[in-house]
Image (cartoon, rainbow, N blue to C red; front, side):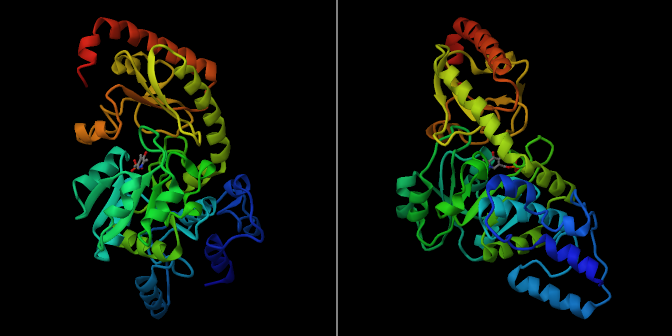
Length: 406
Ligand SMILES: *Cc1c(COP(=O)(O)O)cnc(C)c1O
């Protein structure tokens, strides 16, 4: 291998720069530190599925080393399922933003959570302690025991008592999907003792909250949401220490939930505007939360103390009519895009959760969840105002059916 290609592969994974840099700086430079010296500005996309090697003795050693620790092989990957240089740039950047040693990317947020559960199950630790609400599919994955895990649901104060010798993981979301309920991450991390705490940081992003600094061993993102930020990439990532990252890479290699290099490229590009997008959308969301709280057609507004671009609210009228009434805002699941989306959790994102469990977790049948984008606040309010008006009229006529549940 010539020195140019050694340079190209190894520098992607280069450790932290000379001095600590602010989040806004990391967002545009992390994962790109080698580019200028390579004579490049935009990161290259490596679409290779396989990599040539004339030294099969050397390959055997590299494969043995990966089987032992899960550390990324020095030099080019052996095969695309083992690693990819473009995806590695995104992983490097996200680890830097979350303040962890490493990060491991997956094909979706659910693939990322699956890999974490499989790492622990393979160590004989099949019991999970979790706090509701969680994203609907995360709740379902645990409740259904699809991966052979067993879950105990508790509130943050009950975590220590719920721990067992075979507990492999404690799982929380904060702010949680869809109610935006918050937990005290430091207190929860303390309650976990030596059991790894996984914080799903999808809603807050590292711009508003860095769970690793509060004691979380694992920080999970549905990168489909704010990290990608434009509604065109499905991805997941776990930021953690290098030891756990090695286990995650081994599971990813064995089960195949890899991220496509094009998605890795788009995510790295998305990260560069993450702080600007999150701050701008959060300012608009806080403004809309205030207007909704003052509106007589709205029964309750949920907006987190740490802020953010998500707003949830319960209406007096029929929530389905609000969804039917929006014109600028798009009625759709998912979140974290540049445009504003609204959806009815009891019908869609949290439909898969048993109705009693859902309501017990504070997800009312009248709750709407809105992901605020980058549009002008007055245009958004005009659209919401009209949709709320339509819902109040219909709701007035059909109050008895609306209140009988969804
Ligand atoms: C969307 C979401 C997930 C699942 O991520 P996918 O990328 O859709 O697989 C997990 N957690 C939270 C909080 C989410 O919003």
